[in-house]
Amino acid sequence: MDEQVPLSIAIVPVTPFAQNCSIVMCNATHDAVVIDAGGDVPTLMKQIREMGAQVRALWLTHGHVDHASGAPELADALQTEYGLDVPMPIIGPHEADQYWIDDLAARARVYGFSGNARSFVPTRYLQDGDVLHIGTETVQVLHCPGHTPGHVVFYHANMRLAWVGDVLFAGSIGRTDFPGGNHADLINAIKSKLLPLGDDVQFISGHGPMSNFGQERRFNPYLV
Image (cartoon, rainbow, N blue to C red; front, top):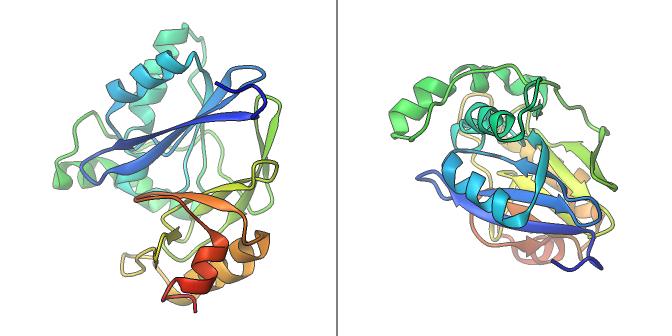
């Protein structure tokens, strides 16, 4: 851990879809969040303990099964781990994705996910322009529909880093053929909300390697 860097980040692939779950810890306080806890809760708990992180909330970019189905189970595990009197908060996504969250248990069975997936109502839905905190650090919320109608992106300006879920990938973009998907909305969100943040901004996608917005603006075949 480098305390000169404000956040420590562990990217943990989870579920049969190798979804990039992020455990993000403020180095000044050890307060942490888990972004897109799709499953494999024992693996996530092991990583949280190894980091010495004190998780304060779970954040979700959207309601698809590989991003959200492990959230209630992880919330329960953390509540027990920390001896909390109140449930661990699950924050996000935008309320337009609740129909996906309502279907989590069925989707998890279809895809053979391990764990105890179940539907839930987030502690808080997110809106475009919301501000969240990890310890002393501030994170901006951007509503970026298209892959799903309620998809959000988390952006940490100081580190020039974004968690984009399934909006954008290295060399590709999110699928829009699921119920509620919209290709025009997705392209608009990428071009109007993400790319203007700057070419140097790196991003962590829901799947695959990291990239930056400049690379995608210049070479991504769906954007050029």
